[in-house]
Image 1 (cartoon, one colour):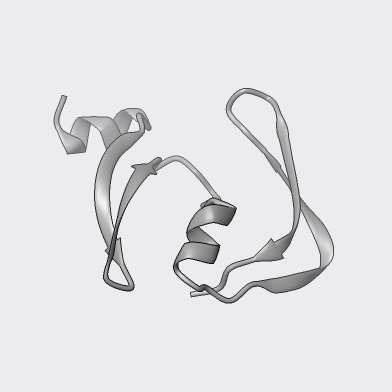
Image 2 (cartoon, rainbow, N blue to C red):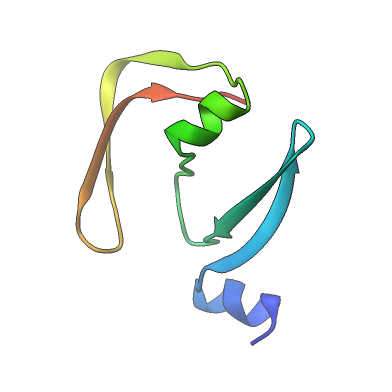
Length: 74
């Protein structure tokens, strides 16, 4: 499957990206409305966290809910 076919089918694409000089394994989902980063990556990369005024509830493809009040901007 090509990258274009994966995007058209909303299939996730596993790849590598670079952030702050570090190599990260990532899973891209072109159909997703939100992006998530692990707490480990946030701490390892020394990224800033901001608190939301209210919690954000995100529905996942497995019908689970992710509830968070923290956001990593930029």
